[in-house]
Image 1 (tube, rainbow, N blue to C red):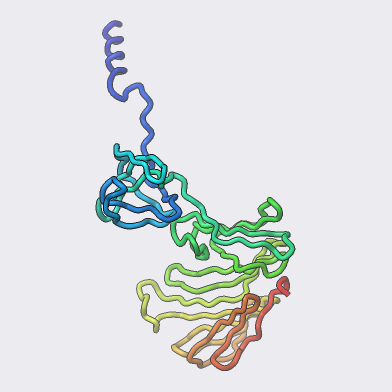
Image 2 (image 1 turned 30 degrees about the vertical axis):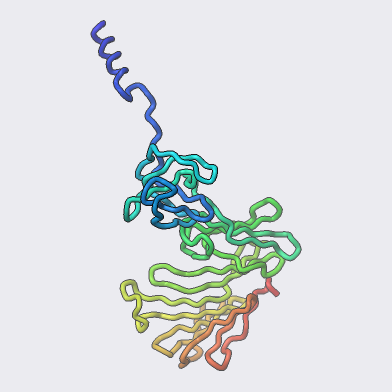
Length: 285
């Protein structure tokens, strides 16, 4: 029994045995300095500047140093961080919590609704209109109650007291463009308005002859007109009925197509003539 007790005592006295392990530093911290965080060659405010990381940027931490300093009345240690060269970041301007910034906000004409567009970094903190980005969140409030929430869509502004014009920047897997739709807050539904997109097969980026260009505009009854490029300067013009039928209208030759948008209406034009009248959603009238 004495032998067993001696062994247990010896094990208990070993470094780290029987004690709670120290919580490791997070692998990633985020820049919370609004003006950005300077990475330096040495752990000192007087050391050479390597680069400045924007607000909200992630920083990969290698280790916390023993060097402590006070900068702007904040005392903290320096971190060795992962960069393309040896670099150090001042810990007081880093946080384990990813910051959120307000990109845009607005209220309906009578104040019934308000929206807030927020970006929880790190990419494109001030734009927040990439449909494929999970960092952008639009919240619409009626009083203090959230009545609508989505990611990726950026509000252009209130269309009416109970509707908001939304804009999405398309950009994924060779697809680029812009799409507009209208959100009806009374029903929570969105209705498509117009779009312009260009798609290129993956691996063939930069080859314009391989791209497909498409324009589309819809009226309040969701009858849509679509122009699709079939060859350089040649467009196929069809009308899409609300029941899904596709009616061939013409093959149009034009040096270029423009998608017009004035904040309330969309239309298509080819050089000197408009081929589709402006469309207006019912709830925006």
